[in-house]
Structures are given as C-alpha cells and as structure tokens.
Image 1 (tube, rainbow, N blue to C red):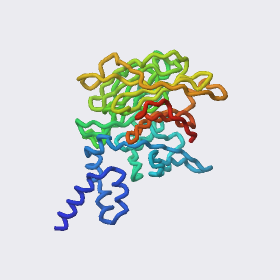
Image 2: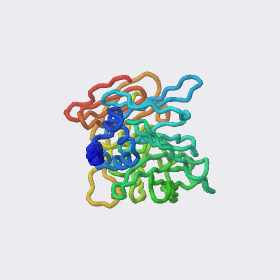
Image 3: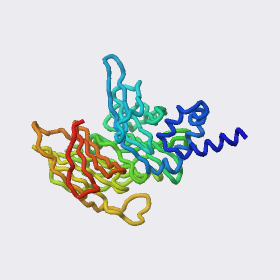
Image 4: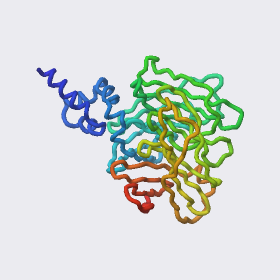
Length: 356
C-alpha cells in the first residue's frame, strides 16, 4: 500500500511545471527524495507540458565578480523579478548561449576547448559536458557558437557546436552534435560542409525545434544578412537571406513571436536609429526545413529617438535581445542598458522605455 501511494504521488508530481518541482523539494523529505531521483528528473524533462514550451518564461542572467573571486551568474525570472539560482565556479568567459525547455546552456564561446554546462535554473543543478576532441582540421581561425535543442520525434536533447570561419575562403565551416543520454555514449559527431558564413554575437534561437543563427555572408560585413537554420531532429541545415535594409551598420536578434520566426533589426546611425520586427510568412508542408526563399513581412517599426555620442561600431559591443511575454502580449527589446516595450494587444506604437 505504501508503494502504491508513492507511485500515485510520483504521477501527480510529474504533471507539475519545472518551477513547482523545484519548490516541491522543500516540502518534505519524501518529496525531496522523489523529486531528486534521476529517473523522475529524466521522465519529467521529457514530459509533454515541459517540452511544449507552453509555460516558457523570460530569464535574465546577471554576472557579478568580486576581486580575487570567480564570477557568479545570477538567474532572474523577468516576469516576477525573483532570483531563481546562482551559478558560481566558472571562469569569466562563461555566459548563457541559449535556453531549451527551461534548461539554460552555459558556454565559453571565445575559448574553443572548454566544457559546456546544462543548467536547470529552478533547481540550480548543472550537467558538465566535455568538448569534442581536437582533430587535424580544427583551426584557431574559427569562432564557435553553442546551442541546445530538443527533438520530439526521438525524445532526445542535443547539443550543437557551430564552428564558423573568421576569414573568407580559408577554412571550412562545420558543426559538432552530441545527443544527451544517447546510445552513442555522449560522443560528439562532426558534420562537415556547413554553409559558408561568419558568426555574429547574437544567441541562437530555438523555434519549432529548429535552431536559428544570424550570420554575415562576408568577413567584413557590418550587419547580419543571412539566417542559418538547423533542424534538431535530422541535423540538416539550410541558409536563408534576411530582409534587405539600407543601414551600413545594424544589430539583430531572432526570437519566437507567436510561433513564427521573428528577427528584430536595429539599424544604427547618428541617432539611435530605427527598429524593425520582421516575421516569416507561414508555409505549408515543407519537411524538416523551410522552403527557400523565405517571405518576410514587417510587423512593427519604431523610431528609437536621439542619444548623445556616436554609435559607430556599437554593433559589436552593445548587447541586444528581444522577447515576447505571452501572458500579457508585451513585446520587449533590450539594447545596452535600456529596455523598450510595446503592447502588441493594443494598436498603439511603442509604449515607452525604462532604464535597467
């Protein structure tokens, strides 16, 4: 009878969102034992309500460092301003690269042969994953981007390591893929022949089980003009063109806007410039990747106002990102230390900005 009661409790706890599972560890010793069991963690991570992303929430990661100490990464829930966890013990080069079903991937993209960490911001647990082995064609002329994705068809989480050349015509691009918990024993697989492109500082976006990476066609381009899409399940990829714009310099970020691929393009200039939100027009059945070319529709456009000083080269120095709060329909854009917001549920234009 006691075993039956525990099994019923386990079935109930499996239906909880990840945030409540973390809180449940503090209820009792019995709950903590159930919720920290590796079998429970594995089953819950593949539950339909977790992998669907229906309850996705925006996270803010802040880095602080005391003199003589390693930096600490503090993860906040943007909606509630609550601290979720503190991750410490990593070198300064580490930072978040993308998120997948509530898990946060931490990597040192500027240091090519460092481990990556899969972090659960609710519980503070993290999994250390060693980098792929070096080979004869590995070169210091590549920049590296790490990303995490989930394949519903195989029920596997995968890590991707994109290696993009930093110089025109000198080296081949390639990608490493690792299946977490796969039958291959956690060995990285190398795929060669990745499209010729150059990486940007923006984070890869996971949308509809595909990774979306903004790139530059040529080495000396000062704005993103290509979109690299990688299907998580098949590991196939394809390159697409971004919508054209006239600015000489721009920053851009890709994100999920109501299930559609959206790219926020911030054209820089003597003023703060213009901000455009472009979405991909829906397509019919097209297999694992989109049909080419993509058809882009401008959804929103904003004048970012004036600012003092020059914005020359800030595309390489100023962090930017965009996200949608699905609960209240508020669209946010972060540029430097300012957050701009727009209420998509109303017909008004930008609703203002707040300094953070």
